[in-house]
Length: 185
Length: 352
Image (cartoon, rainbow over all chains, first blue to last red; front, side):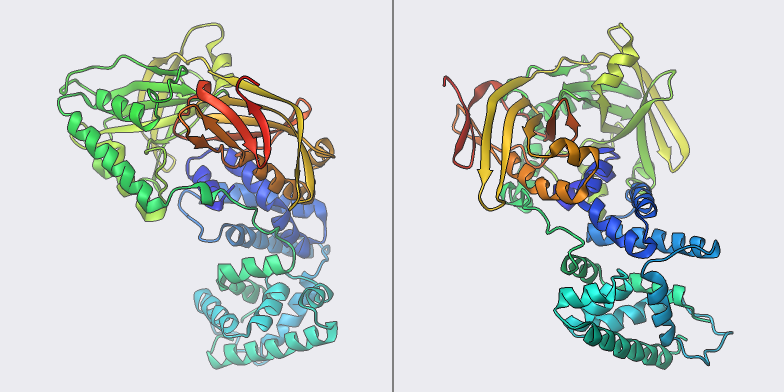
């Protein structure tokens, strides 16, 4: 079924919307969640919660790209779940590694008193990603949006793992410079 | 201080297309199955046709009550007469243009097997209230005295597809009568639920509620609703098998159950029960493309016209078959089917 028809089902408050979304994007969202949680059961719960949130949000929202909209919900839920698990000394998956890597982007002398506007930060990150070459963009989004393992990205992009790591390292440096330059950290 | 979680949150600003395309590159998302877009008319042309049809109807409808006008529009829009639909019932309504319209007035209903599609007028709905739709205004239906029911929505022309900011103007134009402050709505009521609620009686007391967010603005009804019988035709394919070279898959076609506004394709394929029981998403997506292919089968009619049921809305595994449930807005004449083909394979032919 086309995405526009699925969205129509949400707007018509038809419970078929969820069945159809699950059928078409269940696997996709499961994978997004699994990369964070490293646990099929947790990932499945994130996916179920995603359908519920989509159901609650949809009459107000009309997503332009339905799978990306759903995946963004899943990703947010999975990150929250990870944080809760981490507080309970659990967790795993690729997220801890990605988090550790991203800490490179935050200068050590960042002013603790500076309030960072989330919107500004999102805009800056979006602009940074948009300015990357297509190859770089794919690698960056695969790693820091999807939390895909480096080896998997390398395989998909037909790069060596070391080249992928090196690309990520360079991009993190450039992002740090950009955020510093814009006074966002 | 900026922390890594804030940075992760900021990634949500990345363009949706980039996110989706990268997901595809990683192999997380199956390529979108071939849709049914090619079978659809151009949207602009379609809207123009609907507007033209409704303008013609409005001209003819002067002097009728809003209920009669809506009944005529629905008959035309749903192609009830052209398709000789037997599962459509119109209810008696006041004829005078000045007839009081407050409350809920049943207009008509059509049965698609699984659901009763119930068309009603509700009044009063003020223009200020209607302006809240769709974000802040919603409608629910229910059986009086029970807590069960579902959502209802303004009834729009069946082939009109609107989104976002187009919704309110379309509802204002097609579903609302400002003179009588009457809104035409449609509810989908599960046939099995209605049968249970009737408990051996002929009708159920139907109520409509109008909500602003979680706040009840108004209740309409109850009104006695009597469901209409389903009209169904079953085409038995005797287990014909269809092989799709592009997908390199073979599927067994068991039967097609056709109503004027819905269909159920019953099919089987290797591993179907297991995939559905285990919710094996990878396999189900893989076979989803083949299921879409089945729904592209061409149904021909005695007048030479053709029809496709379009992609399935739900695909439950029941009674030993995978059941592809399809639905559409404008009725077809199920008694005028001459043949059904899928690619080069003839599934059914009249008189054969």
